[in-house]
Image (tube, rainbow, N blue to C red; front, side, top):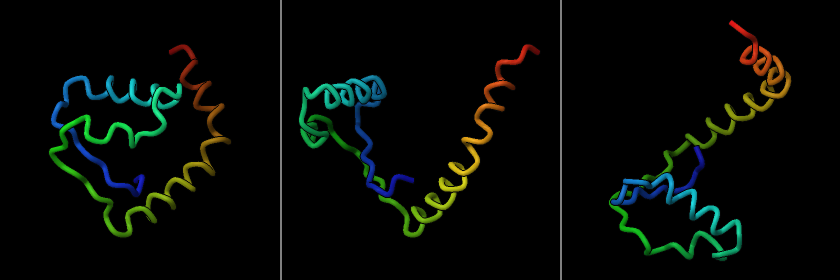
Length: 83
């Protein structure tokens, strides 16, 4: 979907919380970039994008964006309506 390789770390416990903290550290200029974290974690597997899949996701995302804005207000109203 993102058309970039993804790495899975060996320490999966709290990986989501740690990831959010690292994103915040970059956003707050605590680190210059995500490259600064290279080597901090052990990686046990790397996933590579499948050929042609990025084009399919790009097409689907374009369709999503074309339809999201016109219907986002309706979705909000439907979710906020009492049962």
